[in-house]
Image (tube, rainbow, N blue to C red; front, side, top):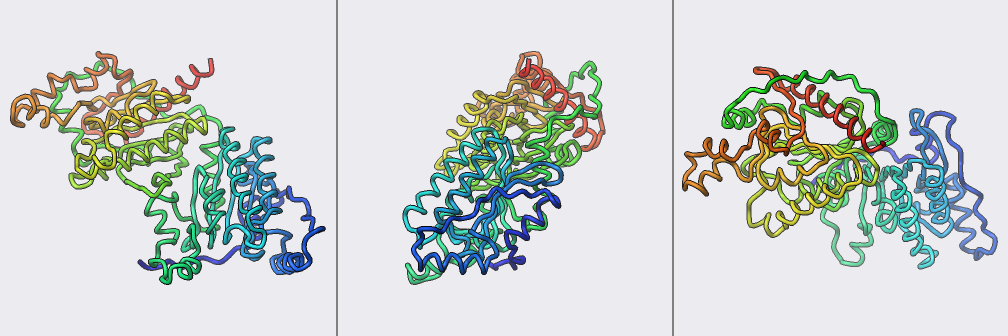
Length: 483
């Protein structure tokens, strides 16, 4: 595993100048009081301040990113390796509490070796108090964005560095719980190369991605565009309703299995804007068959949890990790007060011994349970295949929309045919008798609205029609909730 090249090391002042709009930063910090500090340690702190050009290892304050106000907490590594002592911890806690009181999103950029060894346990336990303040900030429905700079380790990474709604790290950054030098000294062998590197952690689903400091203004702008900006009026024309055709169920099933059929990626590419994709569970698990994204569909901010059919193959079906990613998206929507849009398009969940051991059934149940207890508007959109428990896991929303050829069934029709008839030759007959079609589900009250399809239309055209329907229904759900 190769180690990517790191970008330059930014000082705290340089980072504030880079990320915040010019002239908008206002410090919240009061001078550090060193009176009563043991003389030897005081000399260490004064030397660190002279070297770093800051009075402590963190700077806090308020500024703007492309016109949006944010609170900021930025580490300075040159001050005793960015370590967090009592004064630094108190400064962070005060900044987080003030951000919460003023209703501000919070942006943190870390670069630290962890808690300050010179101050021992009293400083160490303050990591829990920082976390307490951050969870109160999140409980207030306020966004917390984290940028991990090289290096971020120890108590900083195990507290405020790992509690973001969105977390990215700079390219090649060393990010880990235990510093590699300490690990080698304690264990007599080095870490396996590349384990604690940003790119590897992103691939494992521990963090959402890799972003250089130079990319932060654009990333923060995209994220806050969804998390903070109000809904717009929308501009996509809703497809006129018409008498839906009486298509045979099997025709619809064959249509949704075509490789050129509109999928989640088309919906996000053509019908959404300002999309920030979140990767993994943030607990060390990632499955690309499900996508979680912050986005605006027809100018309606929302969290999308969708099944990516292009990533689901016979050898890589939607597993338990994908459903745990889905629940992360559901929790984010609920916590941030954003509407949730689930997109269903799956040939079915993974059926394997490994999936059983990793709780596939339990994850389906927990997705359903989470969806049925959401406190924000929820909209489910069936755009293609809706097969088995994997589809049901994302279905029970306040409103359900389907495309004209979408379908939903307990098993693939071929599987149902085997159970009932002992072979697959009755699949089309089973699809009809099970009332899997969108028009059947509309009649049965499972689906509330259908997006008509046009024969021969491209994926982009259908994606725009679905996006317009989503926008219309989100506005209805939001208005109903407000009334």
